Image (cartoon, rainbow, N blue to C red):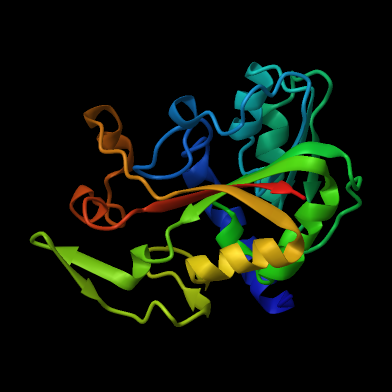
Length: 248
């Protein structure tokens, strides 16, 4: 775990939080990706104990409350995001339990407790993938579900123009990088898809589904097409990966 990186990212997210208020929460998994109302990966969440890693503004937890989830828990690095989530979820009963903490550290969450742990477009911010996944594994009940989405590992390795793709950085190169589309200095992590899969297996998860599909419905294009996510590029390489697994 890199303390300097965590400090930089915390400051960056505290500054950026207003831009990401309610941005791409469930039922969305990511830009130009299939939605939960199409995929039904969560299944019936009625009375389920759910924990979100990187809960942001709290809108994904609010969505699951509307689906009758029993308990809502969330962890986020940003103090601003946690305060925002508290405001968004202030009328929820039972009260949502939110923790300001890096995902690499266990802030005192119960072990073997949750039916579902999930993360929507946040897992790539971890400075230690193995520690984060080990934490998730401990939080879950036996047979519990872990669901997460993140930018597809190929996406920022490729540039697209005039219907053609050009590889601009090796897919094999892993580790921290400064994201060129991020306004404030912040460090993300680059991993191959196989690294996510193998680390999940080594941690004790059984992988059930991997989704790399792209959704280009006209109704959502205006929400997602921007300087970084383009329809032209999404037709050539997926923007998002979604992985569902279970604690074995």
